[in-house]
Image (tube, rainbow, N blue to C red; front, side, top):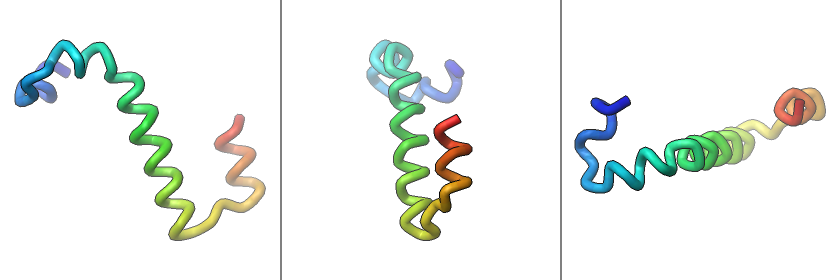
Length: 49
């Protein structure tokens, strides 16, 4: 993971917030994907579980 973040100036901030950054990326991906093709009830249940 160190190689992935070596280009950033604020490495300490990035390491401390990696989980929240990943959660935000996943949330935005799902939101944008559902705009293209809305989730059915089965898809919503799979994401919730």
